[in-house]
Amino acid sequence: MCMGETWFVFPNVGGVNSKNCRGGLLNRWEKAKQYSFNFVEFPANFVRKTETEFLGLSVGEFLTKEAINKLYLKDDKLPRDIRYIFHTEPALAPKCYLKWYSEPWVNRFIEMNIDIARHMGLPPSVIEIHPGKKPNTNQFIAESAIKLFNNFKDEFKVKPTILIENRTGHVISNGTQMKEFWEFLIQNYPLYQKYIGFVIDFRTMYTQVSKGYSNNINSHFINNIEMIPDESIKGCHIHNLHTKAPTIRDDVPWLSVFNKIINVKNDLILNPEVFSLGLALETKKFCIYMINEAKKI
Image (cartoon, rainbow, N blue to C red; front, side):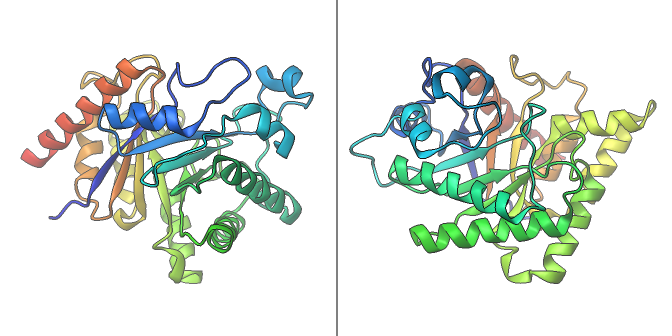
């Protein structure tokens, strides 16, 4: 067994943004380096409810160039070693529909993300997207991810990794659906399996599985984990509650989760997806501890 490289992500914690501002890259990167994180998570959402008055736009709208200029700090001199991740719209609000089935919508989505990257002065290394609900399908999601990859490659001469994050109630939310998507991708677009994969939110998957079963939830959850092809996993979001660091006492069987993680030969990003710096540091320590415990089995 040879586990790939593990990189920790400095999450979008409180204190890096201010009122009517999503912040910039440099302040995040300086904190990330200070606390030995390898990547920075950066928000690339549609218009949020708290931003509507400031921007004069509605909830769920695409960001215009004017809105991007208002929302994001532009740093004059960025270190060239900055590595950051776009976390795009997770479709939390009802009006934030993800329409991978609509070519005009996909084109506008890509345009917005390129505009943000241009404004920041540096393209992201990783772009996280979400599956959305029906009528999205594996084909629409895969082809949109490929188009996103190719547009960034053409615009910035880079090859970003496109990661799909499972979400409760979306068309990719459990292990079976991840397996089916991966089989579709490698059968139809095998050249892109190097650049496309999953960033798994295990807490979200646990919630999804628990909706389908009233007994033996952990057993069904572990079965779901095992269904996910190892080579499809390129990242993980680690959290239980966003306001509390995970522990071995959580409902999520973390030892099984990390047993899966240590068997992945891809390089992995691990994002302690919590809301404060202190919790991020606690969660990072938890991940390192759990990796070591899983290796003992």
